[in-house]
Length: 409
Image (cartoon, rainbow, N blue to C red):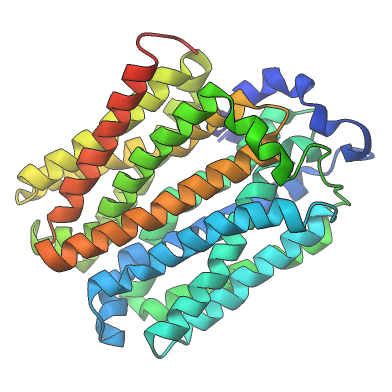
């Protein structure tokens, strides 16, 4: 598979205008492709760890004797911490070699997964997830902008390789973790995730060259980026869509178990189908954003909201549940590329600052969505997170359509 088809191709045309790759920020020579791939694998490891509890939520809750709503804090906490970590990273690590920053962040991933795999109560479990939140927020702020800097001769392909790790981790990490958890227990899934993170740290130490910080990186550039109207509209859309997505997705496993009658073995296969559909969604959106970013985001929100609505209305029919989850996966595969394309294209010379804003808002709303979904499921039952998610995602589609009616941007 040609991985550059999975990424954000619009950056290829804009890369020549990005001042942050000039002067002292330029590398002496293009890095080997193995270095770019290592960052992509790091992205995969982080995203997999972040969403691993989704398919394992009932097991974790049962083992630690806590409610599924409280267990959902393992999704909420990293999101909130990552939102803070994004800005702290561009502030505290402003002058540091980016390879050293990545070593530390991926090292936190390893420690986090070890703590979670050995946790005996909720407090230790959440401590591990706090460390993960720090790693996630920092990595998305620094790591996602490194592809073009490592390979300035092939910006589109390098960016796509890094983002393919994000997408594959998002759509395939959960079903893989669910399969591992079903076969060997949820703790084994986190232990394997820790081992993967350790291998990535070793690879980054071996492969990455010196990477000086960007010229225009820092918290002082945040107000300038926030004044861009397209950024403002995009961030509001992120609030709607991400809140709805993670309110529903965090608790889809209990719904499919209790309402759709889909048990563990079949659930693993269904989540795998969700992931495969997500890969196709990534392919589709990579083509779509080149032609119409507005319609790409609009279609993504409509697919997410409609599939959740179909699932909650007719999910007691197993074949409808399967179809809805697959369409949901297709939309979710489109989501990161569609929204990131919108945000990043608005500030191509402030990528780390734009990334920090996107990460902060995105992670905060992911955590808020999981929290709201947890409150809903504990008080109103397993269907309520899906109702909330569908409403929020469709509200995001209405927002985009209203603010940019029939306008190509």
